[in-house]
Amino acid sequence: EAELEESGGDSVQAGGSLRLSCAASESAFNFNLMAWFRQPPGKDREGVAALTRSGGLSYYADPVKGRFTITRDAAKNTIYLQMNSLQPEDTAMYFCAAGNVPGIAWRQAVKFNYWGQGTQVTVSS
Image 1: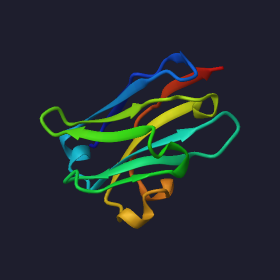
Image 2: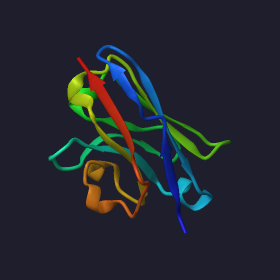
Image 3: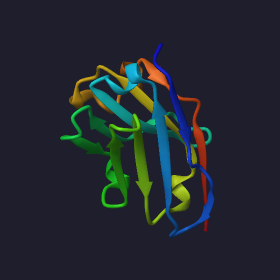
Image 4: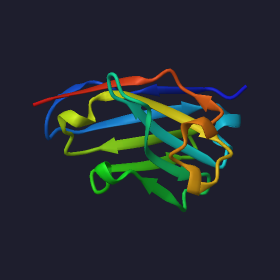
């Protein structure tokens, strides 16, 4: 059974940084795509960033390009989301997801089979 566990969420001031971690089971880490999604209060879940198993291709939502970076550490079966220049609009529950998803579909949450429980990020102005 694939398992994912996020950590690293916190409350920060605007302009601050956080690094989220997603520890994955071996089976989850071997899916071809792992991604970060977020769900702001009262809104739908949205794709933030995704990374292929090889680490060779990454995808980012426009609002986070240049501020967020997704990386993976194969030795630790972990993916990370480095978030810089955080803004209040980045406030959300952040989720890690894994699945055999084509890169073109990375934003489609329904395509991902496995999810973590989420970690809360709150950015105050």
